[in-house]
Amino acid sequence: MKQQITDLLRAGLAQLTADGSWDAITLPEPQVERTRDRTHGDFATNLALLLAKPARARPRDLAERLIAALPASPLVERVEIAGPGFINFFLAADAYRTVVADILTAGHDYGRSRQGAGRRIQVEFVSANPTGPLHVGHGRGAAYGAAVADLLTAVGYEVHREYYVNDAGRQMDILAASVWLRYLELCGEAIEFPSNGYKGDYVWDIAATLHREHADAYRVAGAEVFAGAPPDEREGLEGGDKEAHIDAVIAAAKRLLGDNRYRYCFELALNTILDDIRADLAEFGVEYQEWFSERSLAERGAVNRAIERLREAGHVFEQGGAQWFRATTFGDEKDRVLIRENGQCTYFASDVAYHMDKLERGFERVIDIWGADHHGYVPRVKAALKALGDNTDRLDVLLVQFAILYRGGERAQMSTRSGEFVTLRELRREVGRDAARFFYVMRRCEQHMDFDLDLAKSQSADNPVYYCQYAHARVCSVLRQAAEKGLVVEPSPGTANLERLTEPHEQALLRTLARYPEVIAVAALNHEPHQVATYLRELANELHTYYNAHQFLVDDAALRDARIKLILAVRQVLRNALALLGVRAPEAM
Image (cartoon, rainbow, N blue to C red):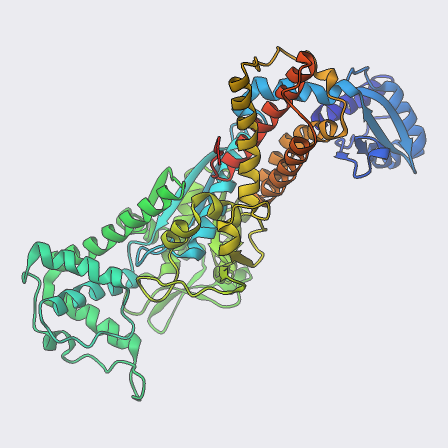
C-alpha cells in the first residue's frame, strides 16, 4: 500500500510537470510514511514541503495542486492537508481487505520483493577459528548473520553466504601440537602440558582417535619434545614465556614428526573440529554456499599479490626485518605488520588478501559480521582496501555483542566439556533451536544481550517465541475443530465476504498484515532482523486477542468464511516471518 501511494504521488508530479506548473527542476523522491496517529490518516507525505523551495511556491498551495493532480484510486477514500503542507491519505475500507486475498494468493512469497534484483551481496558470518566447538557468542553471530542473509534474499538480492575457515597460521599449529601432546600422554609419556595449549576435552577426543587408529606410530619420548625449549609461564615461577614456549613445542613437533606425520595431525585436528562446526550449524538451521579456506589464499598466490599491490602503490616499508603496511596514512591508529621478520605472513596479510578476493569476485557489497571484540580491526581492513584503490563503501562490518546467559535471575554457570565456555550445542539442547534463534535476534546486534534460559524454556505468554508459535498453532487448531464438526472452511475466492470484517480486532489485524512487506524491506535494508521479531510479537498478540474475543466457526456461513480467510492470512504471515528468522511454525503445541 505504501508503494501504491508513492506511485500515485509520482503520477501527480508527472501531471504537474506536464501542465507546466514549474520550470525544469530536480523533483524530490516522494517519501511516504505510515502515520502514528490514525486521526491523521493512514499515510502521510512531506512532498509539498520538499518541493516548495525549488518550485518557489507555498507548501500548502503546492499540496492543493498536487492533490488535485493525483489519479483516482479505489484505495483512497480522501486526502487532506495538515499543518504547513503535509498531505494525509485516508484509505478506503476496502483497501485493507484486499490484503487478505493478496496473502492467500502469494502464500510463501507474500512480503517478498525484487528491490535488490540483479545485485550480488556476500555475507560472511561466524567464521570462528576451527580450534574448538562453537560457543554461545558464535551462536548469536550465526543467528543474526543467517537472518540478515535471508532478509536480503527476501527483497531480491542474490546472497552468497560464506564461512571463512582460518585453516592456516599459528593458532592451528597450537591446536595440532596440543592434540599430539595429548596423544603422547595416551601413549604413556610424561608431559607437562603447555599453559598456552588447547586444553578442552575435545582435544583428548581427537588425540584418542589418533592413538586408536595409529597406536604408537606418532610416539616420541616426551623429553625430546621439550629439550631446549624456553621455560613456560606458570604460576609461582618467574621468567617464563608461554608464547616462546609453545612456539618451541610446535617447532619440535614439526621436526620430530616430519612433514607428513605433522601434516596428518594438523589435518586430523582441523577436519574433526570443522566437521563438528558444520554439523552444529546445520542443526542450528544455518547453511552456507561456500566454506572459504584461508590456506587457499596463499596457495593461489593471493596474499603475495595483495602485498605486492600495496608495495607498488608505495604503502609498504621495511622495519626491524619485517614488512609493514603504512596504515596510518589511511586513518588507522598505527601501522600494521604484513610479513614478520621470520618471513611468515601475518593473519592481517591474509585478511587483506581475502577482502581483495571478495571484491574481485564481483560482489556489489560485502558484509562482514564480526564479534564486537573485533571493532578495532575494522579501520585497518578498510585502510588496506583504500590503499588497494578499492571503494570501502562496498564493505559493511556489522558487530555483534556477546550474549550472557542467566538462570533464575543469576548469571548461569553451565557445565561444559571444555570447562571454559558454554557451547552452542549445549544451549540448543537446553532451550531448543527455535528459542535460541529467536532470542538471539530480538535485539539490535550492537546491544548487549541477556539470555534468560528459564524464559526461553517456558511455555507461557511471557516467552516471545512460544507466544508467536502458539498463535500459528491456534489457527491450525481452528481448522481441526472445523473438520471435527464437519464444517467447510475452504476459503472463497478473492475478497468475497471480507466486507463482514468490521470488528475493531479485525480491522487491527488487517492493518498489521498490510504492514508486513514494509517491515521486511526496512529490516533487510537496515540489517535489523529484530524488527521482524518485534512485528511477530505484535501480530501474535493481535491474533490471541482476536481469538479470545470472537468465535470463528459461527453459523453465519459468510461471516465464518471471512474470519477463516483472515486467520489463514495471519497464519501465512506468521509462517513467513518465522521462517526468515530460522524458526519453525508448529501446527500443534
